[in-house]
Length: 397
Image (cartoon, rainbow, N blue to C red; front, side, top):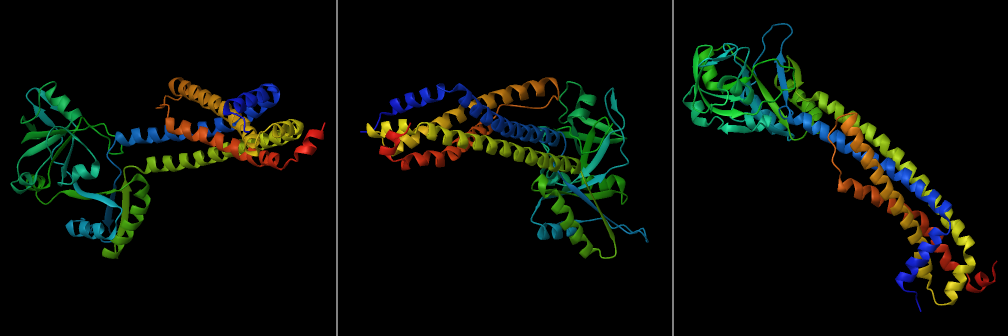
């Protein structure tokens, strides 16, 4: 007749508590391994949050290709045909927009307020999709604005605050270097990946920019990849495609997120190295569990024989030894997760000022690794208990 589960649990606890030194050393080994794994997972979460925060402060990642000639000085402007060719050839492209610098406008005035040194850009309809910006008030340009050359503009929050203070800027008219523009929307203030000391940004439609500047207008294509990781491949494919279209030209491609991509890659390398160290520590802890389980089985041979004689099944004997290892793994893993959480929280609040939030996913992964090591390390030593001869076990000292 098999023993009740409650009796198995009681016997397991008595076995563990009878030798605190052995149980403590086993728990310590698990603690060290899970601490390394938990710390690595926390570092990964923190670095991912840091990069996400930096990305949120600027436009979505994009590249800007330039075609130029070193000899003739004849630098073609990339247009609609190039845009279509790039879209068809490169699946990694999420969106393409056209952006131009409007050099004739450098300031904006509204009633008694004036903003000097503003950035003014002409954009296409896909600008928001490419940059990932959101409208905070009003609307973005529509096709009618383009077709009818409407003198409308969009400003960012920085410029809106500078000119209008607390007043609603929508449908208000401003004068930008003498040009009257009606504000139809306010968008987020974001960095374009470069240091800027401007007092805000103003956008107008491509068609209206052409009308006020004539033929003199520098435009470029902003090409946004599906993900930050696609940036490098997108650069290579775009350069190859443009060299085919402009074989006698030089191609230069800039971007607004290369620093973040390099930072992410270096952090991933560091995280992988830390994870390897954590796994090694877990393996060492597992070896310790295996050795202790083997020693325990040998020391308790007579006990195993007696229990088998009074009705304990092979599975129950084996289960008890595995359960002992699992309990120690849970104890060591739980202490490790709690300790690393506390240390990480203190460090991110007082030392490095980084975003950190307890992750149940990371805790579950770390605890799962502890349990896996406990079960794996104790399984084969525990399996030996099923092969012990009852008569020989009862006769052993």
